[in-house]
Length: 137
Image 1 (cartoon, helix red, strand yellow):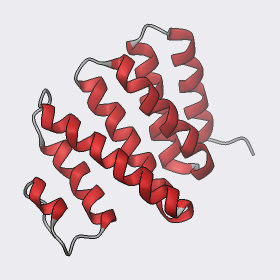
Image 2: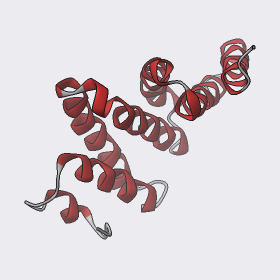
Image 3: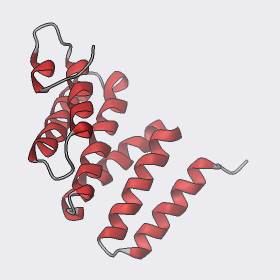
Image 4: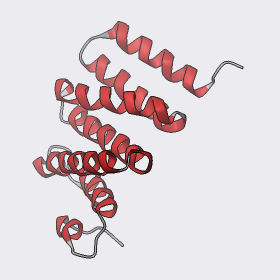
């Protein structure tokens, strides 16, 4: 189903997962400084938290994507202090998933640390991301 507006996420026949996916897609289509963009990702995080609480095995990856998207939106708005909690939680949850999700979350976390002028933590996080890409044999 194509997502064309916020009402698409509230239709009766829309599953909760599809609603979160729609909110994330809508947030990425919005103008960078739009308040609606922030509202979309915050709502996506809230809804995906509820899904992950009910069934962690099935919905943790969706929560990680929502948290990472929220961090990216906050970074894009020049609000790294608000991005940090989202980025930290996304990275913590992604560690259990591993793979590309972990690498992307660590990259977002490193970028957040750098925006906060916490260069030592940014470098350590970037090294962790590199190690996740090429794990030792």
